[in-house]
Amino acid sequence: MGEKSEEKILKGIKSLKAGAGRFGLAVGLSYANQIVEYLKKMPGVIDVVPAGSLRRWKDTIGDLDILVTCRKGVAVMERFVAFPDVASVVARGETKTTVVLKNGMQTDVRVMEKKAFGAALQYFTGSKAHNVAIRDRAKRMGLKISEYGVFRENDEKWITGETEEEVYKAVGLPWIPPELRENRGEIEAAEKGRLPDLIKVEEIKGDLHVHTKESDGGNTVEELVDYAVKKGYEYIAITDHSKAVGIAHGLNEERLLKQIEEIDKFNKRLTAYGSRFMILKGTEVYIRGDGTLDLDEKALKKLDVVVAAVHSKFNMTEDDMTKRIITAMETGLVNVIAHPTSRLLTGREPYPLNMEKLFETAKKYNVAMEVNSYPDRLDLNDIHCKLAKDMGVMLVISTDTHVKHHMDNIKFGVNTARRGWVEKKDVLNTRPLSEVLKLLRKR
Image 1 (cartoon, rainbow, N blue to C red):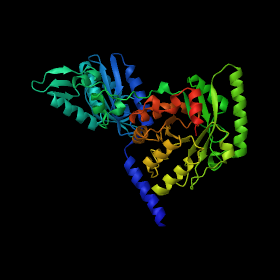
Image 2 (tube, rainbow, N blue to C red; image 1 turned 45 degrees about the horizontal axis):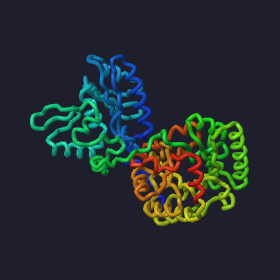
Image 3 (tube, rainbow, N blue to C red; image 1 turned 90 degrees about the vertical axis):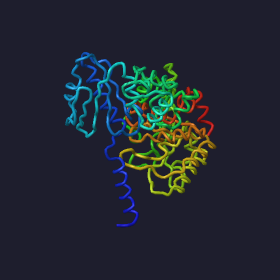
Image 4 (tube, helix red, strand yellow; image 1 turned 180 degrees about the vertical axis):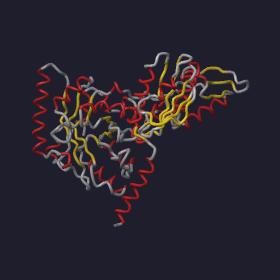
């Protein structure tokens, strides 16, 4: 066995250990939604809300925390342990029950008093670092905060706690969105009235990374357009793979030019029917190891949007990988770098990159960085989103759709961006079609 093979195996083992006991955000959300709907159907249940890292939209979660309020005497725990996906009951009580689901995920349900529900939601949402900072602030004000409410420290008198807004107001702060609660400056920003106006799903006006049956997608252009129109979008970009990605039946120049003609015809039909929707002509072009692009310049210049990505040769040094992507941007042909670190949350570590250098070049050449909404990617991650925002780099939140319903994954990208303090103004595809086309043509 060669030295490089050993390194790959050791890296894989390290990655598996790091992810042991963790579950992807989408998995956690799916189970949480099922449990919430299951418990809500019980007469007498008032509130059922997931808390913990899931509510903060962290990319992976360790377990589920679900808070409930109900009328007195309602047998919430009896119903919970009867949930079909419960594999075993770890502990059962009147106010807290812990189970393990069939997929191995631990889930806690807590029944709280209505008057303390806000305090409990704030406490169990976390993060630990955020909560410690809030409790320290409360202590300096002569207060004590727990999951049961806000109390005066000297005589233990309960003050407030029914809503989260009341808890934060008690310590002189506005409500802080859950995605920001990581003690990364959000408390100081709240104190100064400078919390960001975080981007919302409904502000996305189109998707700039969509695949069709021409490469490795599962739908026709017509089917994708129909789905996007129903979502209220103004545009989508068709970005099938380029020829180097053979496993995805990537397009060569000849097939791409034919697709361009077909999209032009489709857009004319849309206009004739009075639709303002537009299909943007694009590609997801492969960035070769030396930074050159896998389609010729003549073909790329006929497109509305060029999305460029690395799909192989991941084992490069940080300097070489950074140079590879920078070289691609320096061609002046690229609009977007897709899934910039190529991480897969449950199976592949990100390759090493100098993100500051990458973002400096992106800003210089008007290249946007993608926040890939595919649940196993979420790439850029939240930290990189914040860095891009701080450096003035434009972001694109796309879904990398391969089947039409993948467009619904946009919520994962948006909430990842929210964790990075991203606002509407920081994201290219929150803009209307006319403005998007102007910005894309600046390359």
